[in-house]
Image 1 (cartoon, chains in turn orange, yellow):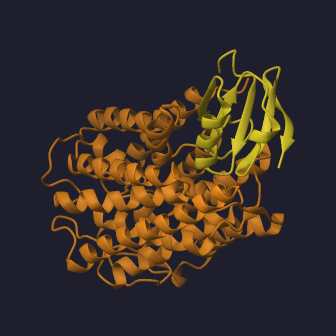
Image 2 (cartoon, each protein chain N blue to C red):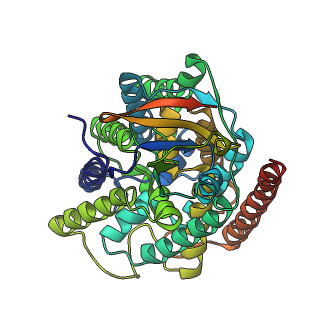
Length: 358
Length: 77
């Protein structure tokens, strides 16, 4: 029998939480069993889009999530190639979602994993994330939408997951084509097979359950529904228990791995990521999953994130662990918030006029 | 799912869902789109009574009726 939605979300969250702890034990950086932003950033470095030597690796987890979602959606009939819902705006929003995440040092998923290890800077990030989602909800409830998508051909829908799988095969067959960190977070990784398996499982489960870090808070604010947030809570609980068992749990702001305690920028960075995620209709993890289901619009957002990650390191926007963001990063976060609010405002006004005209 | 949820309406935007609820008048609750209908995580309106065709305006995607454990599409834009 098909599992009901809430148990499915709880199981997905618990599996991802436990898998994150296992990946960390197997070699991934601390508190970084899974981090969509960090791993896309590592891939950007690996394919020479940026030259920050400590964050370059072809992370199998990302390929696994896309391929897992692609495979399960083909099997279950959820594979619906669609595109045409403001792809360029999605690329730009994806860009700033990544900038915000790299100023905080983690995507919303890693934010929860950081909370599970006792990193209180992630609590500041969570408040910012919720504030960004709340801001996005004001626009959503007043008419914001990026527009309808249209059906596409199956070859168009398969192109992005196919490209990701091709890139991974290339990485296995001719590794000399890629850059790999010799020190720093990029050099720390679980064995390829374990990382790929974890990504595949996470991608399949997230596709079936619609797990989304942003959707849970959005639904709680907009329609008082707590279904989606159950996945979020399960990840936290599983990660917390796993970290207590492995002895990694340590509460505090200071000396947390791959983190900084610049509260304002943790808050604003995740606010930017939260606002962008609501505008895109899902967090970075959800964008990977929807791209696997054949959404060209989500693929555009993922490419925006990839480009954003490269820019974050080429233009010194990303924060440094321990010291936080430099001036460039602070300016980029403020610029991102202004641009996203401007886009949301213009689209909302335009949509309201459309409804008023009937 | 509650017994009164006999029909479900899906939308192209959150705003369209809010407008529908406002105009519907009767018992109407907004919840995530049932997983059986879509892999997207948008908002759907659940109602028990009839849905007047005048309510199926801009932004409404489809109307489904309860059919055993599942849903049967009875209108789509």
